[in-house]
Length: 316
Image (cartoon, rainbow, N blue to C red; front, side, top):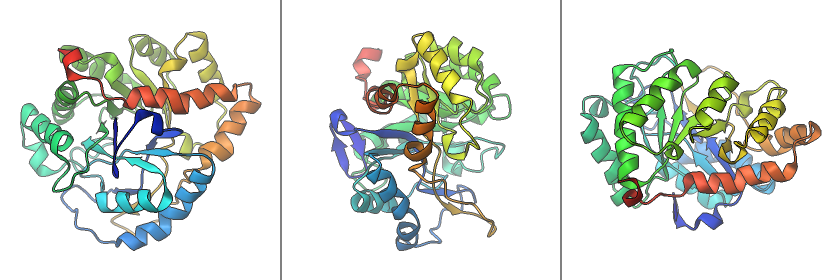
């Protein structure tokens, strides 16, 4: 079973799945979480884009916004109910870019590794806050400055221990590929099976040497910078290389698309439409010789396997 904000569903009901999207994002900071918007505001802004994606065949969105970055369960429930799209929420924490803990709640920053893992495990076992909603994966962000800082290492080890207890997959944002080896060494030390780790933004720098090296170890490779891409020219050759190296079964697609932004200033931050993948990316790849059936398998079968909860007993 897969946890969604409306309750668990069968893996077979996931269908066409985009693995990395957002509905609400708060970049003000984790300790400024008071809702300054209404659910109706978000619905009016986001729902037309969700309807568009649904009409293009999208059945499930993996909503990669943890607590501290804008996770809002009330919004996700309403968006899922009204759009008819399954929405999978997460546990975890976000410390990407150069924010240095700004998006991690203070209470989490001050905890030990095992205390954090206890909190995240409880969300999986009992539900988030006072709801019955349970996470379908663990979301992290780290390493964007070329190294993994102490807080980030603590979060990663806590995520690994949570994964080993619950079977949830870790979706880990690492834009700077030079940080990946350190992250992989940490998960190795913590005895996490490689296939419980998704390298988010593997296409950020499209470092094919590391994509192939660590893909062969068994981690998931996620191409999800599609939503903001000026063009898609670098993707066909990368997909063909993964196919050549028998790694296509470890590829995932997302867009990092959306969303309703909570900002400190009234700056323009345009919506990245959820349907862009179907309207632009897929036709471009097909034109460049990528079999449409291959793409369909990635966004259905691969997503299903990545999100399937592995029995913790198997990891002992």
